[in-house]
Structure formats: C-alpha cells, structure tokens
Length: 357
Image (cartoon, rainbow, N blue to C red):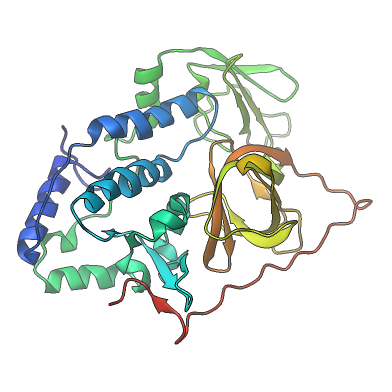
C-alpha cells in the first residue's frame, strides 16, 4: 500500500504498474494475485522471529522459498503453465540424462544463485532464468529499450522490500518493542547499553554506541547476540574467525555420498566462496570444515540463521541454514587436512542451458 521512490525496495504498486505496461507492450496476459497475507505470515514473520531469537535471517531466501517458487509456482501450474520464469541472475544447465543443475550466472557481479539455492531440484525443474547467460545488466537494459519497455532505465532495487525507508532497526523496534540490555565484552564487563539485542548482528561494527575505546584502541565487533539475557557481546575482529559450521534443514540438488567431500562454501549473497569440506549428518543436517588448504582458511562473522550454500565450481550442490559455528583454532600440533575443491564441468555441446528453446 505504499509507493517507493528512487531505488529502495521492490514489489510496490509502482512496480506492479510497470509490469502491467511491459506486459501490454509484449502482448502477454497480465495477472495479479494478492499474496500479502502469505508474505506477512512467512517472510516477515520469519524475519521478526529470527531477529528476536538472536539469529540473522535472509528475507530474500525465504521469499524465494515461500512466495516465488511455492505460492506463485502453484498459481502458475494451476493455470496450466509449465514453469515460472524470473529475472534472477542464475543459470540452469541440463545434462544429457535430463538432470537439471543450478549454476552461477555469467555476470558474477549480479549472481543470485546464493538466494535461489533453497529451491531444491523439484522447484528447479519448474524454473527458468533467462538472464543467466547475459554478461552485464547493461545488456539487459539495451534489450528492454530496443523492445520499447519503459523500465529499461529503471533504477536497481536494493535493501529489504518491506522496509521501505531502509531503517531496519526502526522496523524491528516498531514490531518487537523496547528490550533494553547491556553491551559487554567477552569477560562480561559492561561497556554500554542497547534498546534491543535484536537490532545487532554478528560481525557488526558500526552503531555499537560504546563510550569507551578498547584497551588496545582497535575497533570492536559484535561476537554474539544473547536474547534471553538481552546481552550483546563484542570483541576484536579475530574472535569472529570461524573454522566450522553446523547447518540444518539442508536442501540438496544432488545426493552427496557418504563421508567428507570437497566444496566451496558461501555464507553471504555476495560473499567470497571459501574452500572447505563437508559431510551430511542425520536429520537434514550438514557439517562444514573450512580449515583446509586455500587462499582463505576461515570465515568471519558467520551468524546462526544465515544461509549456507555449497558449490562445486559454479554448480550449486546444496543449501542449509547455519545453526551454530566453531571458532577458528590454529595450532601446529594438529595437522590440517588438505582438500582440493573440484571445478564444475564447463558446459559444452553436451550441455544445453535449459532456458534456450
């Protein structure tokens, strides 16, 4: 029920009008469904409950899971369509045996395979991503302009779509209320106060409102959020190093074999993949060890609730939600196992991008 200005957010009434005009130009049917209640009950509710629990959610992942490739897909199939086609930057590769794989897009700067990894193979079978092979957003805008679409010069959207003014802390405060508590260091020394632990995330540096500097004069970062006792724990950047991750609610595009396997892990939408090894545990859980040979031997600031995506080169192997992490421990007395991250096969004549006719 609100209009956005500039490039904040998406999915406003303004955007719906843009979509209608584009459909008119292209000569295709245009439908509108009000999914606001379902969006509130799934995406927004998860966003609030995760922050209230001291975790860090990713609403774009939840939207893809519950709205675009569940609610919208169900509507499309009910109307007799074969698939949902979106503007996500990701590629689908079909192998000779018909297996469909989710890969990174050719434009690495725009790649969105990370937020799509939650969809799994069944939904991938009903999805198409035409922008996966384009080299840049400029190419897309030029195509739109050539087709007479007014959205060709429209600003990119960013931030959280349901926080129109970009003030996430204000949104959380309005919904969750005031919950004052202490900001402490690792020894429990009180350094400051806050109005709600939910407004802080692991790895955060700015906005801590700590009056006194650290004894060594270095910046402090959020190390943990403890909603039960309303504490926010801060400390040096080294304490953010993570050597292991436990994931839950895993979704796999290919069934992993028994034991450890080499992969690369990514914990943020535009994060740097890190060489790792992983194994599947019982009950949809996964264990990741990132202390392996590679240019980076640890991750920084990984918070419970974040999406953990495993890659084989450009191919998405699976996804899980971070349940807990293990701090990095370096010692020369314990040998570190070497793992080589295999490269994804390069699509050739035997592999056809599924979105091409």
